[in-house]
Image (cartoon, rainbow, N blue to C red; front, side):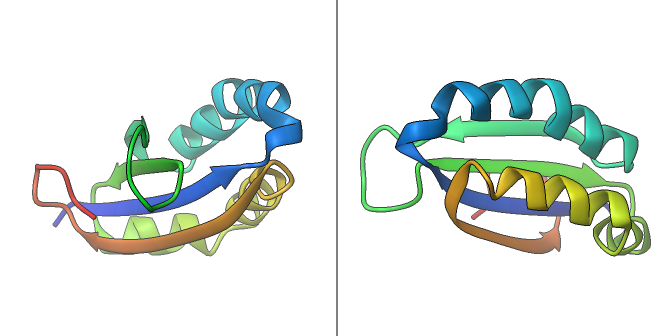
Length: 100
């Protein structure tokens, strides 16, 4: 069964340009190399929640588990946290629509 990785975070005000470069050139391609595809990132325009919501899908829970337990994920998530605050992640069964 396809599995979805949901992530939320706030961008640190002093690192927006570096964050964007990292997201586009390293984080998203890195997730794809780990087998997490269909990466989507949303910006929160209004409301009391994190600034960004991102998701990606792996073909199975086993592949998602392998990706998130890999040294490559540790490196990617560690680098991301240099640019963001309030990082949260969770893994859910992918249902095909918008999920929180």
